[in-house]
Length: 502
Image: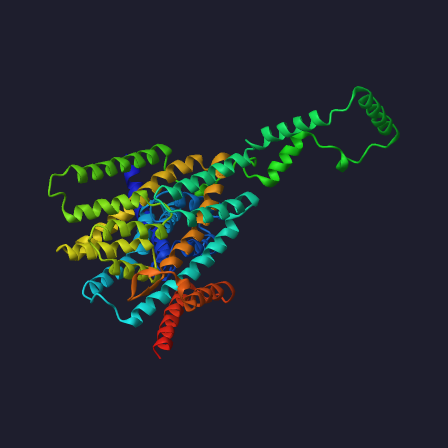
């Protein structure tokens, strides 16, 4: 016993050094993302692929696609969940938590500072400010469009996934509701599962063959004559080479599925370094505990006696609810939060749109707009702005991170199953299609001016379309990075103001 304690004590400095090296590795790789990752979730996914797959090789391309699908299929901030999961695989829970703080805090602190400034300005902003904000929005649309195109090149693996990307993008543009996006991604996953396992192909193929045989069945005399001719030809001709021998139905089905389907391949062997030390039981327990807390929070809000719960608790419950039911990431959270804070009378429509334009130009997650709105809510209600910002920040990020942490435990046990891989392939394609929907929706409200502070389509003025095209072309063909593209968009917005004023 004494020798064991002595050995552990002797090994303690080595463990501390190893922990220090691992912590420094996490900080060194992640520290700059929170101040350089502009453009919203679609651009963040592209940055993460370049950073963690191509450069550091913390994960491989298939793990990246799997985490992308999981992050999109769960509620909460999509790019934040993905960064959390990557660091969870690489360094464990503390590494994931530290990476989240470095990722979110810079933008959150910036949005908090701007909320203090916005709370003290007049009802109408100077015209150059509106031009600057519209230019920032226009450049952001081009950046997100480029990210959507590049992500689709990885998500589209066959004709079916190409169709899924197109249909989900089209469906997302035609209708909008809280339940709609998760249903689209779920349908996409079922579509690839049905296709890969031939649940429709085989019965339909048998039915078609039966119909053809029934229609083309020859008479008995004709059939005997054809059979005799066939036997005579086989006896007089040399046997065909091996490459030309007929293939049985089972062999042909196996070849077809190996070339056009991922479900019939062998289960993937996951390397040890990419396996999580979280059991599916632990993951399930985390998810159950979260939903219990969610039920308690919602019930308390409804049963507290009049005059009702305090403002800050209502702010917490609204943000907690938003973080739980939002699927699709930042582009989806913005219209929902408009209902949760503007409709409640906590924040004015003008201030909300200013926050929308500013968050597009800020690095890090779009969910940081909750800090801006929480601070303004507290100020307008006579509370501390710090308290409002902190409550909103914790409430909106917690659901997604807790759920994805629990889900990763279940995923680590089920990821090597072929049907899981098939479903994630469809969810991945559906999520990429919804990124094109985000491009469309931001395009519709990106033009802000004193006459229409609720936002209008960028297509109302061709100059904003030119800015969008400039950021897209600059990024795709001239390697213009996102921060410079956004700055260029703001400058072009000011140029437009100067020309119109002159």
